Length: 139
Length: 356
Image (tube, rainbow over the protein chains, first blue to last red):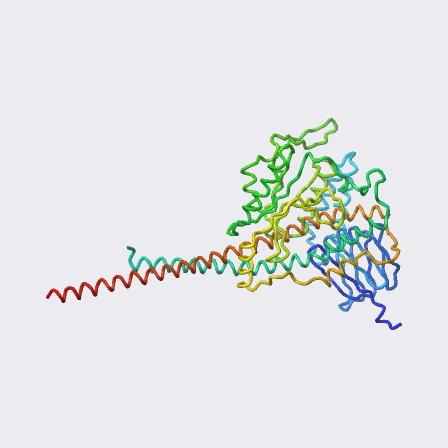
């Protein structure tokens, strides 16, 4: 098969609009269980995404990176559809605000006490903020 | 009888008003167009979440054997004793009966549930102002237990209380904030602070396809199905009026055709293959449900914003027409007065000449 037919069709959909619809060589996804990379011909898969970066390699405009908080992905052999509750380009991230969010998360974590739910919430806030900061500081 | 000069002044003033209402109509038309585009852009996400949830419910065994309901906290129905009512009104006036209708429906809903405790969450400035005037705000006190943990305790004084408002949410509609609000509502449902949540808003498919609905947001019964508890359809005249205004402002009457995009979105997560589940399927399901509820709320807000602009456009179109009618009748009146004055003068000259 010719090289350029082995392209994934990737869509990134947010609640507000369809952010991105392109072809790519591969996609890196921050699944809840850890990062994974999807290439053409991947077995069908459904996964929940945690906070982290979605990276698209080999799109027509080079590599693209988006930071997501929560998402859901459907992988089919020739296409990948990502639903993300929020997706930001690294240069759109408000670092001071993320820093504040991180402090807030740590505060929550300290106050959580016995409550498991409060812990989960605090961890979610922290990981979200950390992912944002990491994404923005990445070249 | 008013003299010509006074009438001319009145006409000039009405003309000025007409210019303002006309400008407001055109501004509303432009905003409506943008709101419609936004509502359209938000469709794929909502559709996709719904279709993957539906597909998951079919693929995995999530049903409770005892009740036949889905095994998820947001699918459990309890007797409705405490109800959360989300009232989505407009931020500004000059929109005809738009805000009044929403408030009327909200009051009817509250009156129809007299023996229940109702919390009101007001979105939109107009509704918030009215609700606050009518019902007291919820009061909380903080209690510290022996471990030093602070818990907030609600002191309910009246059967109907306003628990929150969200100023400026509609002015700049951002999915983030709406999703946060939905999360807090879900948390309240999970903690059994409320037994059900309803949204009152204007559904807006297009200028001629709109109605006021009371939709049940929680608990969920079936994915992908709207649970309408009550709806107010506009009268035939109102619909014709709206259509007329839309045509004169160059707004499409029929909703844009999105069948193709909808079909595409509906395929999400429903391919006839065996998916690998990266996480246990129950977890996937549990992660998706809150997003589904949130997108429901966001959807209600985008439609309400579009409906508000449409209502304002129609009201301003009526105002412009009324001003034109008034100018016509005033001009006629002025001409008559002027004519009468001329006739009187001629009579005076003629009779004066005859007397000589």
